[in-house]
Image (cartoon, rainbow, N blue to C red; front, side, top):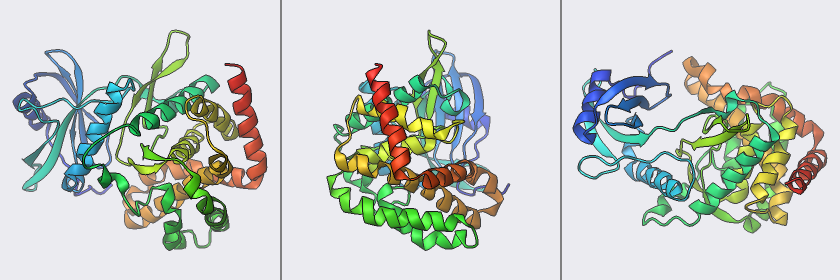
Length: 356
């Protein structure tokens, strides 16, 4: 696999030096964590506590305001009772800093943060019980309700117009459609885009707007065992896609991704919807568009992944992880149709809520 030229490549001794000099902590254990375009080290401090030293890639380093807002949001959500990482301040009192580092090809600037370490494993690694999926929906809604109260002088940076991963940007997929030429899936994606334009877009003004995480997926939710032999959510990570969107976008994204690891994907929506609506009930327009928004997210995943592979063919395996699992789910939901899937989701959600 070819190296990502923007990705930092610090040695362990360089990482130890940064932790000692800037945070006055002594690493007793230090190991690398996997990451695609940043560099992460897990650190146990002799003074107590576990942390993640995160060195941002040189591209994202050029967006310090965006990184500052993501860091601020994590701290804000933690203060509001959600299991997010928090940024540890440097000895000089800063939540992040810019450092010139030589990773072997000359000095480059990188943004550096030290975040608290969250216990747990990815939710994709454990069985998705209805109760856990309910908690996923409930947590996602609580997160967005809290984010809607967040104040910051530069929040407008998160408007992110034409952000390709926003569900407002579905029409932008059309310019990448050639990557599906010759694939029967092309007709499915075209049909979903048509439904987005004719069913979703006209009702967009009725969607409640808010700041959303934007990537509440099976790799960004951590869980750990609870007292009743099940699992509880122990962490929410990766705020890199945070943007101003709509509450229903977050719900659709959550359902789409949580279906990827479930043996019967259609069962996922009801429990997540029940959890979500225990905090933030949908209005009529949001309910009517949920099906097409879930399919739109699956289409985004497929088309953007295929396009990315044309740019980075050496990284195909990594880039196609989610979309490979999403393709059969997209086909199945599309074939079942809106009416049948909605009946399954909404009836299941009602029964789940009645049982609470």
